[in-house]
Length: 186
Image (cartoon, rainbow, N blue to C red; front, side, top):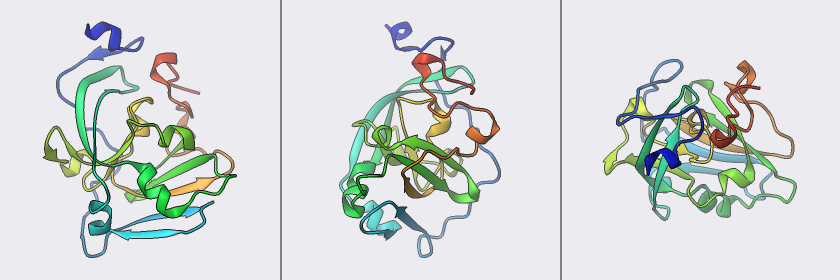
């Protein structure tokens, strides 16, 4: 039953609204890179082809927007962040991650949330390449959090010992963003 899958204050809809801050970035696969830095043993810089060559994962998840809508049974395909972090080797003191995106957008997460089994850095949605409006070439999907944590146009992960607020968190949105606890605003 769909109602059991909806957190408090949410309404199921069929199609994602197209929402984003700023403009859609240009994508040049020859210049694009993905970085991992901060509290890691081996800082990384991967090309788009190297990211796409990593083990692929498919996740079916419900996503919940802080604005009150949810889309059930979305199917995402990409790479699990844990695969990339295996290459970088997080240091023991790394407890948080700041996700960096094109256009200066950032969002923060506990490292344990980024490593959940159903989290993916996605390039496909429901069997098709993501559209630029929905975050192509790479979008983070974190189903356990409100959708503003599922950042579009992701370019890197900075591992941190202390939490730092991202774009929306600096503007009064909740740092943790658990939809089941209705953590919408700070």
